[in-house]
Length: 446
Image (cartoon, rainbow, N blue to C red; front, side, top):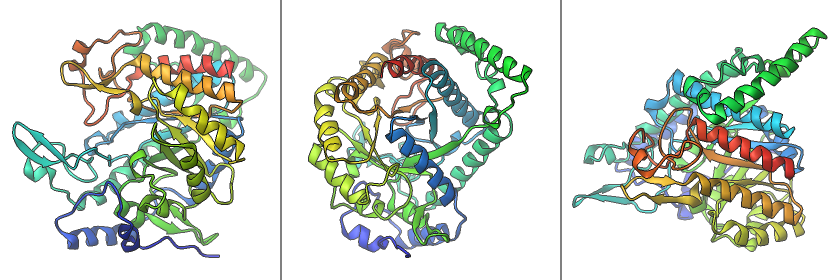
């Protein structure tokens, strides 16, 4: 039976949160109309495949590794940039799989992460007040009046940038780059010289020996030559997401075809809000961010609304409490949701609850706080008897200096060296690998 999503007008009537105010409604309508005619970026069958993988995560049979930029930029859509992000995710995945002996579901925070919610609609600098930067999907980062005006033409730019990114990713993962025999080539010079890079090289040598043995006995499974890789983003801008919703010809069900996995943010998860109303009609695997203000009753109500059939793999709760609140705030949610028999995957976002402003004005995070939140997440699930299903991290494949601490002992003074994020700070490649090894140790004990 065919299912339709509510109209944009109906969704906006619910008071949609975190939406830009476009000065030209006709231009917005034209962009939305054009988006509706464009081909899907992903296919319903691929979303179904990921939903099955997420069901395995929910059963404790797999672990989710989700990572990428806090906010993608149009300038960042280059072969080098996409390859670098994919490379570090492949490295992290191999570390987790090899060191913890658990299948890893690989989910990129890419090809659509162009919009960001903001705590204020306005930004003031030196007495000048302009609209806040809401991501390249909405306006420009430059602090000028012309740049900060929301431009609906950027919604089409999001589509084309996402298409280019997905084309590159698909070429890399099917064209030989993701072949496990490339495990050494994924390590670049600046990582190789670090302690964690040397540890990775030792592991890669062990994998090489295992592959040589398999080759000697004539084993050459397809799984060694390619990987399954899916895309995800926060489905924030209703005009874009609604326009990228299509009815599957096989089932008559609506899918958001801008990404395989889409999620509702902490600021837009109101039970009677537009985002929950839109999401509850989709067949994609979906997520909801839960922060320290979320109660167990909130989580249960969201699950019953978004996944009324209690379908495995359909719903993921992504928790973001902060290192100081995770051990106290998470247990009631997990205990009560579990007691209700709700089918859900639990994933930790150890980034967003641990952000602060350094003494020199840079927004940053402490690597040790990130690790502490992940450890708290694992500790809570171990105590309750549930499965810590995965991590969602903001990271990059480059040698940036945005998060302090870690094996490189980056200090606040060092933030200015290569701080490139336009919104939130990200783990660099060395820190990402460090995190992977630490999480692998936690998984062995889970």
